[in-house]
Every structure is written in structure tokens, then in C-alpha cells.
Length: 243
Ligand SMILES: *[C@@H]1O[C@H](CO)[C@@H](O)[C@H](O)[C@H]1NC(C)=O
Ligand SMILES: *[C@@H]1O[C@H](CO)[C@@H](O)[C@H](O)[C@H]1NC(C)=O
Ligand SMILES: *[C@@H]1O[C@H](CO)[C@@H](O)[C@H](O)[C@H]1NC(C)=O
Ligand SMILES: *[C@@H]1O[C@H](CO)[C@@H](O)[C@H](O)[C@H]1NC(C)=O
Image 1: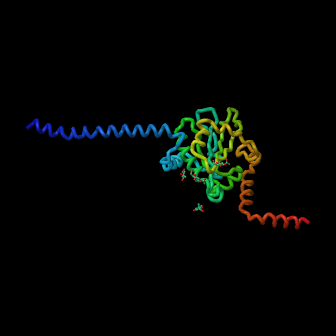
Image 2: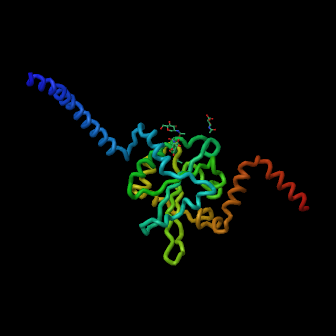
């Protein structure tokens, strides 16, 4: 009697043990899947990543505006490394500023941010949407889809700040894929682009130095909003009144 009840008690445990074998197999299967996913993740991103990538991107990237860009794109004073802080700014747009053709580039960017943010040496990520921030895009004279790669140095001991290096890297809106963007970082491919040193440089350019970026941004934006016949009328009006 005692023996039988013990057996009865043991039965569910046995059944459980037997059920556990397939579970162990299942776990092994999952691990294999995860491993193949991770090892293949960088060169070719599986399409199942998109939804997750947008979520990750949302958490690690900062959206630039006229008000915040100067405080966002600054060297982190608490950083322990001496080197410059690298920022990758993704410049995007919508129907008006990118002719509605920035979708593929944005998917590639989101995937790249998700992948790159796992790297210990990852740059920081920001997004400039020209549809929302036309003045800032005009002040920098940049268009979507593109990446502005910025190396922002820390202030030196004497409080002087070395020049900021910026590289403007246009993306091909038809053919860009995530690996085009990740190799900018993993293979330092951004260095293939010469640093930009012209007047539109956001930090050291002539226009920024004389604090003209904002007014110029507004003027250029204003001209883009203006019907094309308006400047003609204005000029003929002006020249007539001068005579
Ligand atoms: C990319 O990520 C952002 C969040 O940062 C999200 O708002 C956007 O919808 C995503 N775009 C695509 C095409 O996945
Ligand atoms: C952009 O244009 C497409 C097609 O013309 C339209 O379906 C979509 O709603 C537009 N998006 C915005 C934000 O206006
Ligand atoms: C986006 O990519 C798809 C397939 O990769 C392509 O068919 C489509 O033309 C691309 N869209 C744009 C706007 O380039
Ligand atoms: C973008 O990619 C397409 C397809 O690969 C190519 O035909 C086109 O010339 C490229 N455009 C530029 C500006 O490189």
C-alpha cells in the first residue's frame, strides 16, 4: 500500500521528467537560432528586425531642433575618454523635403542604430528631420537623406576648444541598406569622406562664427517658400524706385 502510493506520487514526476526532454531540445533549438541570428545580424539584417529596431532607435537617438542642437551636440564633460565625442546625425525629410523617398533610408538608419548601439565604441545618435526643422537644415545647408558625422572635441586644459570635424555623407535613397551605415562606424568608413570646412560648417564655418546661421537659414527657407515670380517683381520694383 505504502509502496503503491509512493509509486503514484512518483508518476507525475516521471511524466514531467519525460516532458522535459523535448523542452531541453527546444531550448537548444532556440539557442542555435539566436546564434545564427547574431552572427548574421551585421552583414544582412533580417526583416523581422524592423519593429524592434524602431523601438531601440527611439531610446538612443535625440531629435535635433533649433533650440536644442547646440546643447545636444556638445562634448560630454563627464566623459572619461580624452578623445572627441563622435555623433552621427541622420538627416531625413518627408514629402516636401525628401519627395517622400526617405523611407528606405530611415529603415536602414533604424536598423543601424539598433546594431551599433550595442558596440562599446558606438557614436551617439541624433536625427534632424528637415520637414520639421527646415530652418536648421537650411542653416547647415544639408539635405536628406544623409549622415552628418561629427567629431566634437573636449575643451583643452586652457579652456580653448579645438576645431570640430564634420563630414557630410549623402546616402543613396534607393539603394542604401543598413550595412552601408554600420560600416561607417565598424570600418571607420566615414574617414573616406573629406572633412567639410566650408562656410556652412555648423560650428566653425564663417556663417556660424558670425552668428548668421539662423538669419541665413530663415532667408533661404523664406526664398524656398516664396513663389518664383515674387523676387522678380521685388527686384523690378526696387530698381524702379532707385531710378
Ligand atoms: C524609425 O525609428 C523611429 C523612432 O526613433 C520611429 O519613429 C520611426 O517610425 C522608425 N521608422 C521606420 C521606417 O521604421
Ligand atoms: C505623403 O504623400 C503620400 C502620397 O502622396 C501620402 O499618402 C502621405 O499621407 C503624405 N504624408 C504626409 C505626412 O503628408
Ligand atoms: C525601397 O526599397 C524597395 C526594395 O528594396 C524598392 O523597391 C523601392 O523602390 C525603394 N524605395 C525608394 C523610394 O527608393
Ligand atoms: C543609387 O543607387 C542606384 C541603384 O543602385 C544607382 O542606379 C544610382 O546611380 C545611385 N545614385 C547615386 C547618386 O549614386
